[in-house]
Image 1 (cartoon, rainbow, N blue to C red):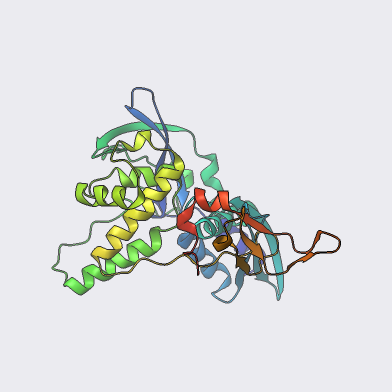
Image 2: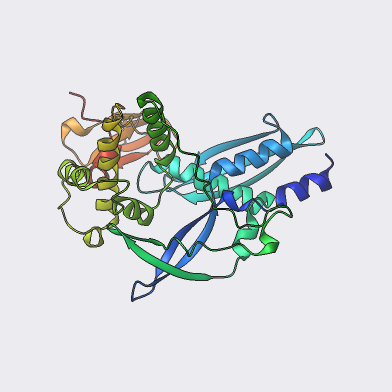
Length: 315
């Protein structure tokens, strides 16, 4: 495949089944919603595999002052490597994983044109409906992609997710499917998407919702009355409740890395000061009364704001 063919393959539209939709905003009357098209990171990875081969591309990541993730995407062309970079903010839950996914998709679009055409789609307002505690796109209102945004052999009329033929699943098969679903869902959602999922009784029944509220310390009220931090805490608790239902234990948060240099950090919380974590590369000069080395810290106020992101205090 020469460079011209590679370019055409990268820019080729995706089949309609690979394009997903979410509600960006709603009308005041909650009758119509503005929909946004996007690609899952796995669809982008498949496109890179098809064009460059599984060993012909690589992605590297680094943090941007603890506030975002920068992705360096490299592809092999004619024996050499071509590099592109772009970044994205971290998310409110599973911050690093969410930032990595967003940064990867962004550099694939801005640097190599993969899925970039989706930004050219016209704005579309569609009918929405109340489903449980959330507003979703009405079943008969899934947007149709224009012909120029589809491969030549794709009519765009097939449902985004084909309904498989009914069959009887064993308990082990059902459990494994649930585990895979949870693994894929963590870190991919914005607070708005979390809220949509929390309000869907097909995803979280009332008993599970109440238990998640109890574990997260969130009042059992409409999610419309919760801020983004409360939504994130409730969503994390809901995942734990659902994971327990399929026999998957909740994960313990790992010790944080320094936001300045990426090194390990010392846990200072047991001394009750303003600093919760301090970079191992820092060194206090008692005589000069100045900090030497790395000055990276995580303040206790940040830990109090997001307690679910940090491991328990080690005595």
